[in-house]
Image 1: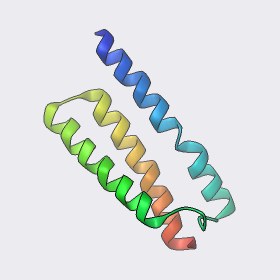
Image 2 (image 1 turned 45 degrees about the horizontal axis):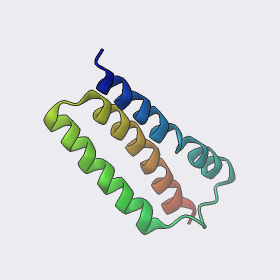
Image 3 (image 1 turned 90 degrees about the horizontal axis):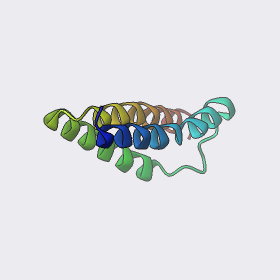
Length: 84
């Protein structure tokens, strides 16, 4: 596996895992009051575009990172919409 791909996967792991504590906290407490709806919506839109870009250039680390992080961000957005 090329070094650039390894670096990409490590970066993907770091950025994706960084969202897990926020999802767990929002899920457990059902509190998202301190989270900005606009910020997470813009972030999810950006992740969607990165995912599309990754698919277009067939870059596996981009696809994995942005696909998984998008799922986490959408979970937080869903909780924000449900619980305010």
